[in-house]
Amino acid sequence: MLSEDIERYLALRQSLGFKLDLPSRRLRAFARFAAASGDTHVRAATAVAWAATAPSRGQRHRWLGIVAQLAQFLQAEDPAHEVPPANLFATPKTRPSPYIYTQEELIRIVDAAGRLRPNKLNPLRQQTYATLFGLIAATGLRVSEALNLKIDDLLPGGILRIRETKFCKSRLVPLHETVVSALGRYLKMRSRVAGADDHVFLSAGGRRLPRNTASGAFWQVLRLADIAPGRARRPRIHDLRHSFATRVLEQCATRRDAVARHFVALATYLGHAHAGSTYWYLQATPQLLTDIASATEALAREEVA
Image (cartoon, rainbow, N blue to C red; front, side):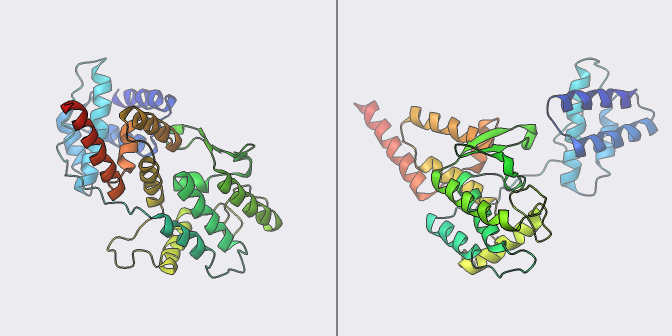
């Protein structure tokens, strides 16, 4: 039965660390659709018909891609399974340009967070956001990683333990001494008012700070700091991660062997399993382009000589 094959496929991939919460629901829905059509194997026509019921073209593309992955797996065991055309509903992707903050803007963000309106229910509102935004800017953590931090994730020696984040991976993140000091000051204040919840960053209710709440506060901070006021697309918290990756690469040497070492270190620090994920976070800046031009000129001179 196709449903049994799907459960086996899901169990295997989940054992490898993939969460597959949404894909598992989609594949089970496809199994019901295929069973209603009398199919015992993946049929390309059935997969296309099922994907076509999705409410948008983007979702149709994703639904069909999920079934195509399943079919490739099953076809290796049984050639009776058909692999549908995964790109049938594909649309060109456009990547919104991330906003790369300057060092001066990052200072203004932390300063503006310290000037947020006080909240009686959350006496540490200003300190919480100043520390949260400063930590993400200084480490390039994902927003979810920062919000999920618990007190015992701050290890001796200035090390952060990032637990089972994307793809169920964990990693250790060394911190600069200035970040360690800032966290220490915040935790000292937090210890005077915090309740039972052991998350580092807490909301007015004394529980883990929700991402939407943090995003709302960040937009207030951007207004207070007067950052990119006329930009059509507002900068995001996540752009702090883009900025970190780009600024770190700006600081490395331009020799190809040195760049390669720095890039591997950066990918590891950011928690990426593949180099392509790190490339996604990089953005061309005047300094990077200048470095690239200088390296190209030096290479051309070597070849001429």
